[in-house]
Amino acid sequence: MVASSKDFSTGREEYNTSAVALGCPTHRFGSETDDFTVISAAGYFDDIFAPLIRDNLVRTGDMINITDSLKDAKIYRVTGLSPTVTIAELGGPSPGVISGYVVTYRSPTEVNVSAGVADVNNNIITLSSPVVHTMTSLVAVFDFHYIYIDASASTPTTPVILDLSDEPAYNDVLQGWYNGLDRCIGVLNADSFGNVEYFDTTIVSNVMIRNSIDHYQIAGGMNPSGGWQAPNMAPSSDFCPVQTTEILINLQNTDAAEHVLLGFAPVESGTLKPLILDSPTKWIGFDILNSNIRGACGPTRTIVIGGFDTNDNVLAAWVNEYGYSR
Image (cartoon, rainbow, N blue to C red):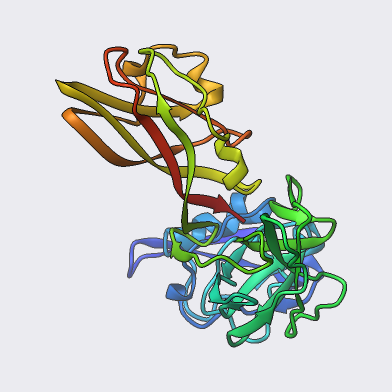
């Protein structure tokens, strides 16, 4: 099905496929080898086409045939394709892809949603320009509210944004956070008056977003024991949404004329490492210590904190920021 011949003027082989032999239509992938950046797929792409493209063995004007054997091939990133070939013809994009659709604060009743592209239940839905979304799920109670792309109401070029207090769950097949078939693109806090609380947004990556929030105190006046302790005022999970993967904690401690240690750990790993000195998220100072420390959190979004057992009874902690995946 694939033949090669030596080109002695260049010292490399030229590979061609035969549409007649394959008995299928022929599609052009672009006019230049540079059109290809990454191709990784099942079947013939891994075995034949990808290596040829990678090694510059496919020449200008070469034709590559898409056969029934490539129906399930996944194209992860291809640039510069000819208009005669669509992503749908090549098997579709990878599940879970998302770019843009970042949710930011606008007002006590509104949020901004940036332009973006997202895979929603195996359908690419594009928002071509930013929109303002007016919240509909706000009530007079502190809670998290999740922003979704409505799968049933959206079209490929006209997404419908909705908000719910219902938590999403991670969908392993679709590779994203979903409530039913609706994909979650953002989250925010609402206060006990039913207003969106102000938050600053940092884009870490297409799938990782950080929200800086009001300081929520989870511990105060604690007596450190030298090991891990649960915060004495509230669990950190009260102030972190379900898809949180990291937390920024403000920790404070004092010990007159002595060294002071502060640290926190996910409750899942804190129970396995009882000594606070094992913590990768810790600070050691002298006399007075007030530090912002960012670290990972586990599935429960619950942390344990600690300090030297000689410290005064002033160990305190606040949740200042959470990072979440989408």
